[in-house]
Length: 270
Image (cartoon, rainbow, N blue to C red; front, side):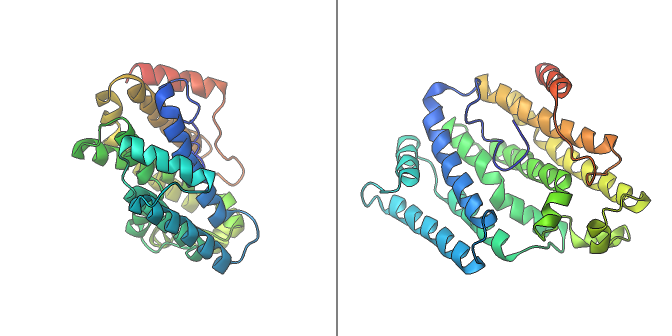
């Protein structure tokens, strides 16, 4: 598990049942390639939006059951949708978030950021629960909390990287609350104000993660163990941010061998 760029998909995890791997790989291929359209390369915004619209049209073909899709990415996705009865709305939500990435680089309020997380991260958990035939209301609610928390963790650890892409995911209202502005990010200032902001954001992400954590204990078998590692990995990254007093400009948190030992032990003892 890595809290980064859809690597929280358990594509090759030993804990993932072999029967589900083709479906998970199909979902991953769809999400990763669409995300790359929004983020990678030097295409113009209009080109990116047009390419994402083409993805939407392929989903329309899958919904209409108008015959096999031609591009392999969508043919595999179509097979997974049919075999497991996967809903298409989470995939449409992902595309909505990717389109937003093309045109939106700032978020005024925390609620605005959570709305983005609802579409950029939560669909992953929703689709996994459908694959495991466990999409109850309680499970979906906890999954949303975990996925949104993971997205927030990713934002907090990648403040410097996102700045290079001219993006700021820290809510503008939070920057103002702690007396900070974009220039502080540009100059990588890690003063007392910044440290206070990061403590606030870390605690908020931790609380959200812990609110959904019971799902990892409630789900049986391999998915439960997979989710325990995901939750503990996200919490460990938050601890890493705290250890450097929020200075993610000079010390982007990464998980090493000792971290994985701690994550494994904490997963076992949840």
